[in-house]
Length: 149
Image 1 (cartoon, helix red, strand yellow):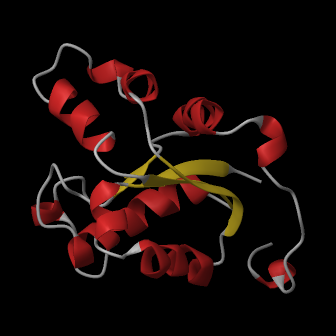
Image 2: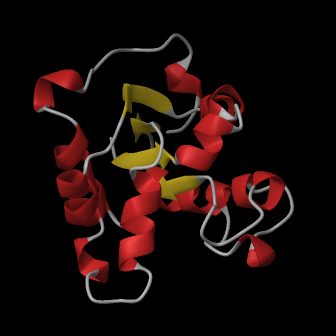
């Protein structure tokens, strides 16, 4: 089953949106495989956003992600990478569809509530930054067989 990395950013944590956002992924039928509340340090922040190094928004993004705890998560499910991105909505909340997470909760592109991997390869890289293999659980949820073929 496909896995993705999602992170609730400092604005989501500070605004008390953790449960609301997690609930959306549970209700969709995805399975939570790992979760932790953590304070991101500079090394982890720079490694996470390394593809943006040298861009004008790199340093503000690094500073922001270190400013408050985040919730790092691994979710599992059929087509979870693409479907989670669709549920999140556009990176810029002004372009996020109504009912999407960013459309519902985010006000600014630099405070857009959630991060999600953009590909299976990115998910594997990001998961490995935040979780050791033994922290990612495998289990059966009741009713799981009714979600897809």
